[in-house]
Image (cartoon, rainbow, N blue to C red; front, top):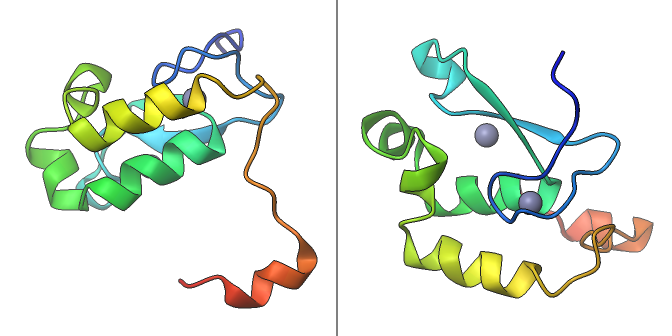
Length: 97
Ligand SMILES: [Zn+2]
Ligand SMILES: [Zn+2]
């Protein structure tokens, strides 16, 4: 196990239970995993389809080339390290999946 360090996407320290992202989607038998914040992970999948991840965005550098990701990183960097998107129980029914 690697020691928990900083998030490769936003460079903030990772929480105790970071989210795991497959650089190449599991669907395509990807094995390499990076640890990210939940919000950062969600941002990746909000911006790229699995095919885009497979074909191009399978490195952190390439993910960071994306303008939406850059805007997100700029935004999230100003948040405290333990920042997470508030998830209230009452909001859960509005979650789309
Ligand atoms: Zn992050
Ligand atoms: Zn992922």
